Amino acid sequence: MNIKECLEWGYDKLKNFDNYRNICIYILAEILNKDNVYIKVHYLDEVEEENFKRFIQSIQSFLNGKPIQYINNKAYFMGLEFYVDENVLIPRCDTEILVEEVINIIKKNNIVKVLDLCTGSGAIAISLKKYMKDIVVTASDISNNALSVAKKNAKKIGVDIKFIESDLFNNINEKFDLIVSNPPYIKKDVIPELDIQVRNEPIIALDGGEDGLKFYKTIIKDSKKFLNKNGFLCFEIGFDQKKDVTDILMQNGYINVYSKKDYGNNDRIIVCNYNGG
Ligand SMILES: C[S@@+](CC[C@H](N)C(=O)[O-])C[C@H]1O[C@@H](n2cnc3c(N)ncnc32)[C@H](O)[C@@H]1O
Image (tube, rainbow, N blue to C red; front, side, top):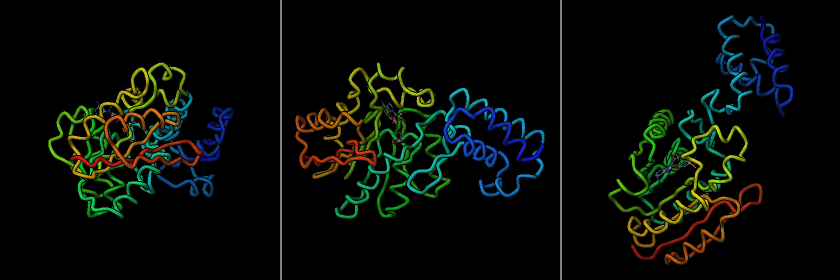
């Protein structure tokens, strides 16, 4: 069996999906440890039996709803390649808006200590440290398995980050100039309606409680004890959560609250200051 025949087998299986050709090429390229262009150019190369079997398994996993990032154990975020598996949320390009804004804030203010709460794959913490070398970054998550992935990514990308296993602030014992978080924020009853690929991501990374605001309420209240004076609190939010999260921030005495939209024109991040601390 050659590359062309192998791909044609995959095309036939995935023909009802958008972009199915690229998906097959991407999966096969990963199995053969080549890039996509190599696959397109060398389509008469032989594919070993063992690799064809792996290709069949991967195509079957995709048909069963496994996201391609989990199949290939790779996701791209802020121009960096992250290892991902079923223990972590796949980093989204919308979250890059949050990282870009935090980088702007760091450039304009005297920010040294940063905490990424609910770090998952470490995407936010690691890209901040990669691009802002002078900051000191701590990253925490309740999931030990997620932290293992984040540690692996920090090593792969070559950044030094302090990781803490913690249920929100329970094991955090210091103050920060900036706290950033993309917490779980999907309403519990919406989760069964999500696309199967999203439902294959960890429920613990999605479930924001009955109203989707459970984590914002706790983080906003508790951050006051963990922020230095005039510290920043920066969140990713769901497209319809701007008003609710803003209200909670105002009720808790935060100031200078503003939001930004993502590339789809949805409200996506909220930033504010706390002048206590
Ligand atoms: C939406 S994911 C965000 C992952 C990553 N920061 C990103 O933006 O791609 C939320 C993360 O919160 C973690 N989490 C859930 N409950 C938590 C809790 N009580 N304390 C700390 N982390 C929690 C999950 O394990 C998951 O990794």
